[in-house]
Image (cartoon, rainbow, N blue to C red; front, side, top):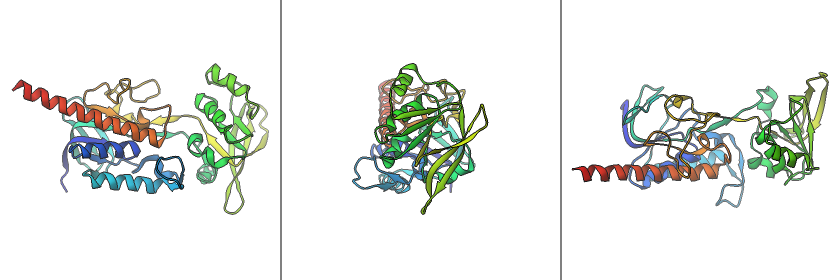
Length: 321
């Protein structure tokens, strides 16, 4: 296999955003290359039941959905390569990407779809209970806990928004925060405190996710009061960790314009970044919605933006002759 690849469109990342961008770019005849990255398929490969992706009446599996997206992208002409890009040079075109495999990728345009990872508490019991009651997305999984006790861990905007959202499904929501005041915007705090379905536990941190039953599922959280050291239990069947996300943008620091939280900045209403010919889509630029369907939508936008950019460039080159 050659250690050098050239393409009109390189797509970095292989979640819903990346594969959707590839499908649209391939259908435009641009023969894109998708470099899958360290987690092929993105976060959906770690999600079991998916019930809110349009087009499916029944619950589907996240890994299966990503396999289908990859198969479709390859069917229409995408080349998918398993590699992890460890260096990028966006200072000149074609853009140059270097993979851990030693391969070099040269691209006229680049679509960045590297995503963002949810931050977790790092407890072994938390890892064990993922998919059994521990989640990092209330919008994704809250529906499965209709009429059940749930808890949200965190104190920022995301945690408060998720607690409020969960009241659509549960009459018993507990927000656990390690400080004595929330970091969320005041308007969100006002809505939270006015909601009688939400109880706030202050100055407390989760020390253990407790499972039980057969098959095993979450039955509660052991929490420690940071002032007294006392351990108590919060009964719940769903626990949502909402302490933030980390966008995968380390590669682009110093080259692309990022916001204060590390997300790639794009021009409003587009996927265009601070460098012409570089486009960003999915969770790497979206810190608000973070859904598979919105990621796919921005993947479509990125491919259309890239196609339009290349077409304009070709037109200018012909006009200059």
